[in-house]
Length: 346
Image 1: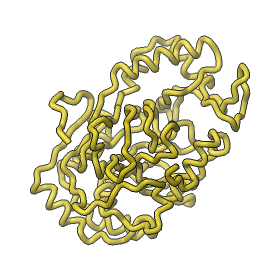
Image 2: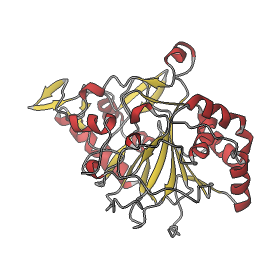
Image 3: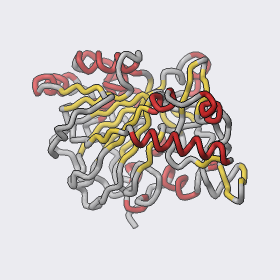
Image 4: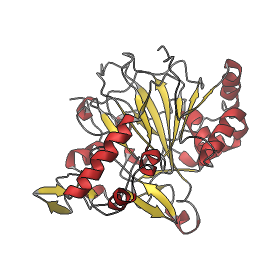
């Protein structure tokens, strides 16, 4: 797919040379454990091959992690398998053969620089590598396998443990050229708000509409209201999703301002095969425009991993890499089905 000639702003870009790419491919060639069957042996092999990651990529990831660079990093020309199978038409966990695609070690090598991979018990059959592509049954959901606009959002907000980073590796580009990942630095918007509006965002007045409600406000079933701006260990945290609902008029006014300004600074990124997009989940939000999938084996295919710098430290170490998503019970019913159940093409 042709690359955009327009400069990317607020995003660091590293493009590997063909020599760097092939050296990296050779360096991780010994990784043969299947991450869907035995994740720990797979990760151990990746870590044994950690020196294979090109130094320029390692340094860029380190700069992102330490706040010396923008909250989004795009790495281009990474090694992708030449015999990539057709994009599946159902949830990855529903496939009869859960073999590794051959790109997982590329993704995990980058993640290893940032922290520890983790995920949720209720998600993707407990896999640590998530395969994301259009699924016909999900086409109208606010879900990564949909076809409608995937609204700008913080990844997995308002959880006891939300990811510090996420990494998205493009295995196959959208053949229509329509799909563009959107990224926006929400901290820039929040920093520009006045103190009164910031105080409103810090109140627990924002929720999602659901048919499994915690509260009912003005006749609408909602999840437990949360603040958009909060603090964790003295550090400000901003959590936002484009379909949040405010529970009163004042909060609605500020939410509209926030949403409008975030959308105005969003950057569109058309991901090609071999592109890796790494996001600091505390600083940026992301989404995707509406697309028209073919559901014919040629649709865009991404692999995702979530990263924590806190979960496996100290008191949390005993919980392992899979944590329970305690908000799962209050998700809309169709969203819960998409998370947990294999979704065959309808």
